[in-house]
Length: 320
Ligand code: NAP
Image 1 (cartoon, helix red, strand yellow):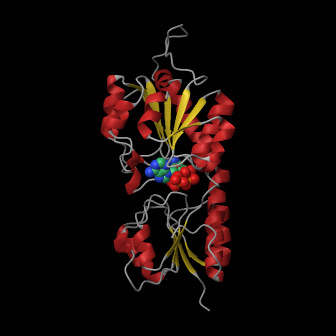
Image 2 (tube, rainbow, N blue to C red; image 1 turned 135 degrees about the vertical axis):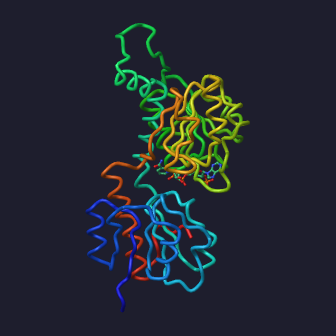
Image 3 (cartoon, protein in one colour; image 1 turned 45 degrees about the vertical axis):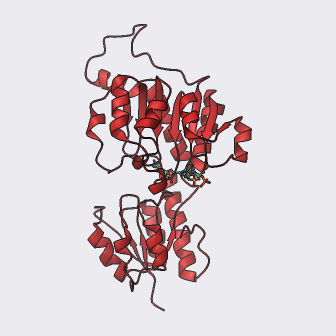
């Protein structure tokens, strides 16, 4: 039997690249440059498995009939960069890496909340720019988290982990918007909102945790932002396409929103220009899962799916 040929589209932590290389015929992207759609199309014809990341685009055109590739083993939990319907139609399985990045991403949502509320980015820029004139009672006054309402949009793994940190660690009251009430909410005393507008109107902080894709595109549009409580904060570690960034920039400029914290953008690595000059938005470069422990665990999870595929077994994290 021919060895299973695997293309890994970006560098993974060395330990998992090595483990993959010991089991399969693996091609690594030594230069770590992003692959083009043409590169990926060509690879579909010569590899059994492609292991992409969120920085790759796999539209319907990639899934032409008659290709060798039978598995897309995504390195990451979100898969809105892959046309799932087209993969399914072409009989190509898709897997992801759920669960192992929940804690790291929830930690980053809290990082953004604290940075935005306590004006940490502004303070650091001021200090490094030599503008700091010393302690004074009115300097860079922010907002406390304790006693405030955190509205969680999408109450899955990361949404719940963020809510647990905010509630148990910072004394926040939790409300959430989901398509149906979740039993896990009881342990946090979390209030279910059946409609997004009521959640937005009651929350001091809103944190987004829905998947990307057509259903959630522009979920937080100009009308939704107008519904948010004056002086509140928006945190996004989900996907950039969920937010209308022009409307967000306008609300940050007018002071309707006190601040925002973003980890994701609609056309990464571009960052909407309207945000770059604003002091009251924290901008991080998609760091949600970026811990050594998590990135190794993500690689191991992708590896487990590729191993199951090679054995003809059920795929543990199949999404299509
Ligand atoms: P998850 O457990 O599947 O949670 C997503 C939740 O969103 C589910 O509870 C789902 O509810 C809900 N949902 C889906 N569509 C919705 C809609 N239209 N309205 C309201 N709720 C909706 O996924 P997760 O592991 O928490 O990950 C969430 C997302 O975070 C990922 O898809 C990814 O895009 C993003 N992420 C970002 C980073 C980063 O580096 N910044 C890292 C990891 C993940 P149902 O049960 O009703 O479907």
